[in-house]
Every structure is written in structure tokens, then in C-alpha cells.
Image (cartoon, rainbow, N blue to C red; front, side):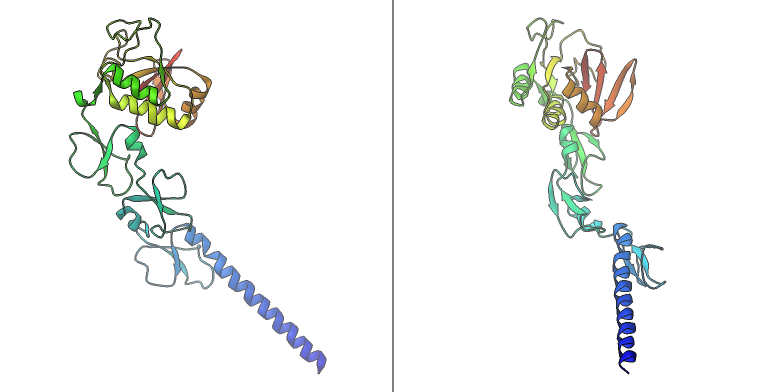
Length: 277
């Protein structure tokens, strides 16, 4: 009688252990669905069903809503991420894993391009893909009228405050002398791009060796028109550009690296020839 009772407890204990293990498998198995941005259900899915991502009964499938819960984040002017937010994090607005949070105000790509994210009319040019949040938010880069052009002293002051110096073989800043390094009539976006897209994130030494002076190639996006700036080479800067900006194309025999903002960095032999659009 005692043997039968003990055997019964053993059998019962084994069953309980098996049930606990089965329940654990059910809970942990749903993580595949959660990671895909969905929830395991048996019915009532307004999105699309995905099989093989849920544990338990055969009729439990992964429901991935058409916009998931990310629509709440988008409506708040943000985008769902797991890292790399230069704005502010807001929880509870994104679907999927718990580490996916809503990044609001991450418009750094537009800012680095010299623009501002907005949904209203733009008195310059609109560029897509540089703003967070709703698709109607686009980057407005104002036209390069006189309001966006700087004097040499204004540009030099902005660079100096950011820890960037200028150098010229002629030790001068007259834009009509090719041995000078002039910043006269350079575009504000060129200066802010050099500071925000290069100097600040890289923390490398940056020395301007060429600006708007004569002696450079012509064209719309030229030195004279204020779109270009030349920087001296150094190992820190070279490594940062090549690591963070993908190779884009060859300009003759010189490689061009393109930043997410659309700005281009060309390694022209003994200096960097950078174009800020």
C-alpha cells in the first residue's frame, strides 16, 4: 500500500514537472512572434498571420498588425528604435520587443544638412528621408540667398567656437587671391555641416585649408558659390569619414564618401574636398 502511494506521488510529481515545463515552453516560444512585432492569437487579427512563431496549440498563430503599435509613435512625431536616439525616448508607443521605444525629435540628419523638419510650405528645397515621424515631415533647406551666406569673419567665428582653425599658404583671407583661404560668401549650411556632421561627432582636429577663394573648379556646387570647403588630412579625420560614411563613387581617380544627409566627402590627394548641399 505504501509502495503504491509513493509510486502515485512519483507519477504525479513527474506529471506536474512535465506540465510546468510545457507551460514554460509555451511562454518562451512566443518570443519569436514578439520579436517580429506581433502577438500570438487564435483569432481576431486585423493584420497578417505568420505561422511557426507561436508555441502551444496548432491554431495559435502570430498576428502582425499592418502598422503594429508603431502608428502611435509615428503620430507622436517619432520613429521606433532600439538605440541611437538623439531626441527623447517615449515608451509604450512601439510594438515588438520591450527594448523598442519611440524616439521623438531625432531630426539630426536634417539639422546637419542645414535644414529644419516641417510639414508647412518651404521657401527653399524639400528633402525626404531626413526627418523622424510622419511622412509629411520633410527637411526644408532654405534657398541660398544672401540670408544664408556668411562673411569671412562670421564663418571664421563659428568655426573657431567649434574648435576649427583655418590655414592658408599666403596667410590671408582675400577671396580674389588664390593663395588665401577665404570664407567670404560661404553658405551657412557648409559651415554648420562641417561643425555638426564632422567636428562634433568625430572630435578630431579639423583645419580648413580652402574656402571660397579663386583657383578652384567652377560649377553650381562649387567653392566660389559656397558649397565646398577643403580640410587638411589627419589620421583621426580620415578614419572617421571612411568608417562612418559609405563609399559612394569615384570622382576621376578620387574616392567620394557620402553621408546619410547627402553631403559628400572626396579624398583629393592631400586634402578632403567636402560638398554640403
